[in-house]
Image 1: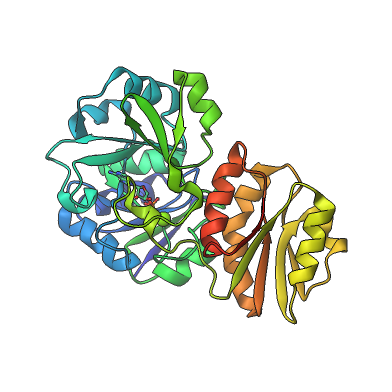
Image 2: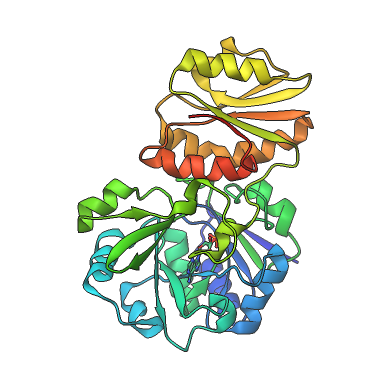
Length: 340
Ligand code: AMP
Ligand code: MG
């Protein structure tokens, strides 16, 4: 039986119990500032194997290891160079994952047999207290069945994981709503393998240089830096089309042109009156990319209940946080994209 912990109640005791369960090899779903994670003791291969089973995750897709204190890093990884150190100092805690050379304590199931591991320190009090209570690093991918949009609120998570995990800790809706920025330093250059709230500009400000992996907006095949790039991701059940043009009138026109009988449009608050469709779901204001990133996974789940013949999503400009939003939306739409 899964125990649900409501964060609004006095939680210290409950968090301690959930931490203990983690240490003993059980699975616990917990909030972070990005999305919810499904966690296990990162030093216990059997416990980590259960994450792959619960999610239906491919075994070559590695898990990110979560810590509560910067001092834990040295016990998990080795050979940190000055660029990596600067990134750690600047972005941890925060929505940021750094890929580093792993030590042998990290089981190969966690790193999917790579010699590296992703390290992240969430900026969320419940996550912090839970990892502290566990007393071990916590391996945690996003709390969703593989291929589905990442879990950002408790109703969606309960549907997929109740009965499969020991605890689900309700921390309210995830603040950021998109997963962490994943960075690997290659030849001294920070390279973004998965964009997120920490943008290329943020990284340039910290270390003067940043590259974005070529596969951010296209379908990756063969050998890739980040195995997660290869997989179907964030997808609603029904067919999906992503449309974006800088010119708002052109965007509305293209959306209207592609609407079928029972089409649900996920789009800007301001364009609702310009679109003629079966159901219109608002993802946020034009230019408010924080609002859109917060809402997008929730809406990609909600849309399934209308059983639409087509889902049309309005995209955003690929700048700043917009890079991360478009990276997720292009995958949600299985690369079915009209626009610039
Ligand atoms: P999720 O756990 O669902 O947030 O996804 C984790 C992402 O981080 C996936 O896209 C992985 O491919 C990527 N990742 C995790 N560990 C590594 C690693 N050691 N090297 C490269 N990418 C990684
Ligand atoms: Mg995920």
